[in-house]
Image 1 (tube, rainbow, N blue to C red):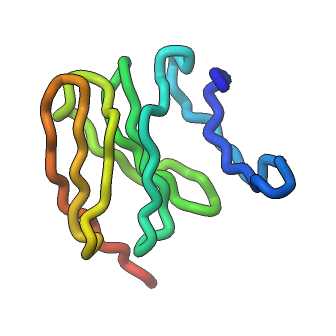
Image 2: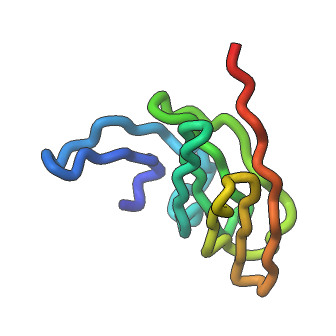
Length: 109
């Protein structure tokens, strides 16, 4: 959908169970191009395109934007992955560049 809303669906019931506004100024141009689950921190990472060409991290299940990775990709982020040991995140964009990011550690209080 092109509504500026990031939604989590229960596919068995075909219902939205959680949603959040992406807060993009022009959501019609802020497409989600890739999605990745981060199991150690219970977060969802999305790769976006056009306006900021960034990756945003959303805390699950509350769905708030906890952090992001900005500035390196010059075009939309098409692919994100997680290394087998979950310590690194490779990303690739239509600018022809691939980046390797170190995953942050979640601090539990």
